[in-house]
Image 1 (cartoon, rainbow over the protein chains, first blue to last red):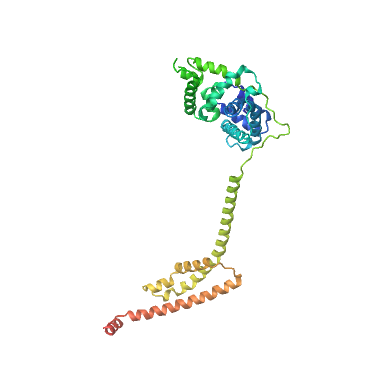
Image 2: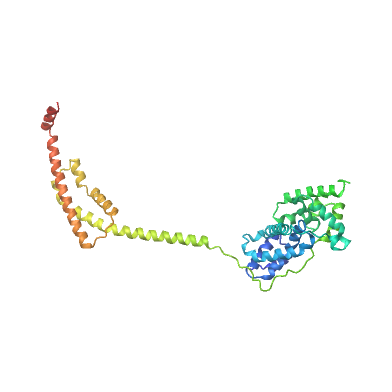
Length: 186
Length: 176
């Protein structure tokens, strides 16, 4: 029996997300354009989180679209369909580096100058604190605290080992608590 | 455990983490439709045909080499067999005259050795001669071989005479 991408996505007993992405990547390569929209739905939060840890928030949405457009064009170069997550995560990290390289001479306009709503100013302050943490911790913390992913989800989608994600989460959280002024254990 | 909550949102919730989640949730990704240009084609899977081509080329080369080898071998083998058959016939006639005790005669008359030598020589030099010339060459070769055999026999007779007891004493006397 032929298993379609829809059947896999609708099946709640499907244990591995990688199986879904494998089916979706193959479907896209066989000409199913909608399959890529499903991949976008699955991986947009990951790409958003990775970018949020590196580039100004105002640029993130446009960059997410750019990254998925690039991924669509280059999908045929992906060797292992199961590695879609790590692959697109790497594209996002590289795109963030490119962004900073190109905008070296430009001055970033702060949200206050831009006149944004002060409703989420506290969120932005904490985000800046997270961004000041070492790179290994900030990405994992943003995926956990901002995008709401669990540790196993982060590991599965980024291709990192569960142990690495666990260590990054705990060490990053400890550093963040210190900077926020929380006293551990209270 | 509070650590479990940070890891997979299970166990006892950590109020600080919950507070952070609530505040930072404002920055969470808001689903937006993907805008792909309509004229953008779906990328096609790039199939790597190199291994298949390499295997096919190797098999083809092996078949060609085997074919060439068989052809060369069949060309070389047919005249050798003729020669061995033709050279074996006169030897059978000469056999009664031969003295079987002599080791020199044995090697000279042994047909298998001669055939082997002939076949070795034939294989090493590819024969591109026409049939008539080849036959003539084989006849000439047989004559040469016959002459050589006669010479060998005569030499063996001389050798025998030299090895007789009277000659040995003479030789000893001469040497001494």
